[in-house]
Amino acid sequence: MRWVETEETVRFNEVDQWGMAWYGHYLAWFEVGRMALLRRFRLLPEDMVALGFIAPVIRVKCDYKHPASSGDRIVIRTSVVKPEIAALIFKFEILLKETRTLLAKGETTQVLLNTERKMIYRLRGEVEKRIHELVSYCREA
Image (tube, rainbow, N blue to C red; front, side, top):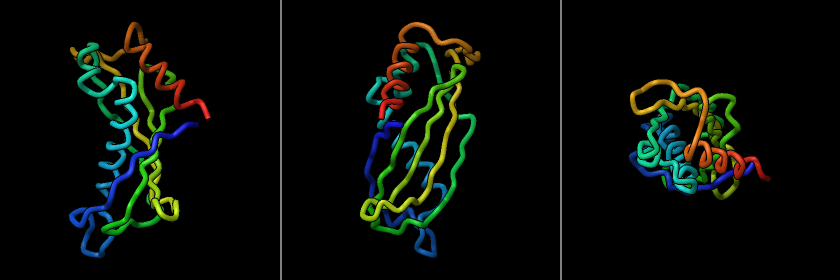
């Protein structure tokens, strides 16, 4: 599996009263990584809408392994797995940059709907081409 890496710094406002990154920010960091990967294949939300689709998240999973602290440099690793249906399944890892310690790992699932919010079961056309390129890229090691 190929990962796309994005770097961030944990900001002071992202930690709780115990000095650890608040759990909800990990989901926001997943989003940073997802957008970086989607940008490469012209599949950002505005691109999807232009192609006639939306892709809401229907499932989120996050396993917390080690806390991040204010000022920590983190690496957000993002990949995607081959969908069985018209969906996108993203995998994430958040690592401490300096030591590569795993802080969290997770997954999101998005389904594809047309702009009338009807479920799409089979990809076609340009969106199929772009998603195929995305999945093929991430499959290469």
